[in-house]
Length: 302
Image (cartoon, rainbow, N blue to C red; front, side, top):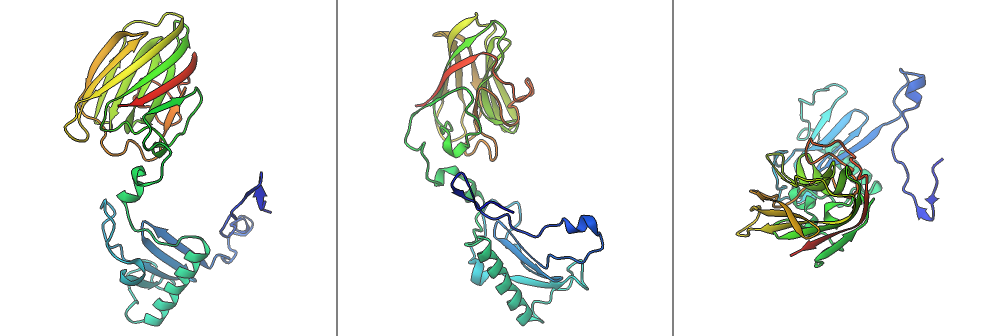
């Protein structure tokens, strides 16, 4: 059975109908009679071959959801898949009572499984800026080696502004690995060592890649590596200049022509000491764990 609590934390039930019985008898009649569906405000309910579903009010690729009330303004369709598997014959107008019954069943299932209230927004729901955040208003953030999978909404907002990274490290001559990174192959940035040489890489949504790299290996021992990004201003998504220094001495400088303006990543994270997602470029393989020691990484917003 399922535990009701783990370490004092109440557990939600694992919902649904087990399919184990089908492994023993492939011809066994189905024990799952009802299934609800909901995604981005598009909804449906299946009951014994009958399907009631909403007509998508906007195309899937639209960044803005429909300005409609889900309960009163959405259009619903009705199909009997027992005789109309391809859902070609919409029975909503000829069988309004059946449609009403199916809609009530959808709301009953939606209430039972915590689907309500229905949110039909799209881009807005993905914006971490509209959520409560511990990082809002802060300018300086300190991290330690091994802190990974920090979501963007809980990370420093480095977009559309000047910012810097200061990392205190202890290395050997050929130390490699991620110092700190955010995002991945489809957009992001990373500060890392490649066989002892410091590199700052900025990936503009995989359209353009910018490498600012030192030419010489770090000597064995403790060092302070700093990346200063000076944003040019004049709007969002503009470029800037990245300056890389070691122990106060500039080792590289380069131009980043364009920066990510709104959201760096949907599903990747801020990681210190390794890369928990995809790489920001193909010069290294994840997790690319740092082979030296990282005392502290500080990100400052300007």
